[in-house]
Amino acid sequence: MPHVEIKCFSGRTDEQKRLCAQRISEVIAETLGCKTTSVSVAIKDVAESDWKSQVWDKCIVPDEEFLYKKPEYTCD
Image 1 (cartoon, rainbow, N blue to C red):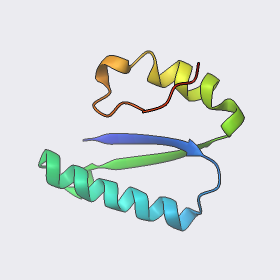
Image 2 (image 1 turned 135 degrees about the vertical axis):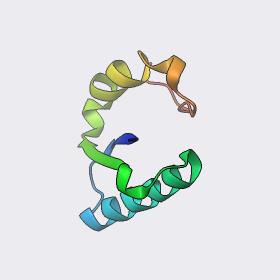
Image 3 (image 1 turned 90 degrees about the horizontal axis):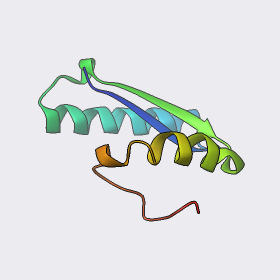
Image 4 (image 1 turned 60 degrees about the vertical axis):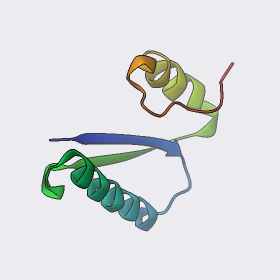
């Protein structure tokens, strides 16, 4: 049962989020060999001003060893 959580800057429409979640679930199902009905995708808006404290410091830095795609930016 793969679950994906996406955090991004605010400003995407619900339609963009739905399409993103649909496409991601299809890729996950194909790549990991499961059904799309087993995949869940959450998309959470984060204000740009809160990115470092809410995402970088809490999610990216502590989980760096698990990141298969690392960001190509820093929040120093």
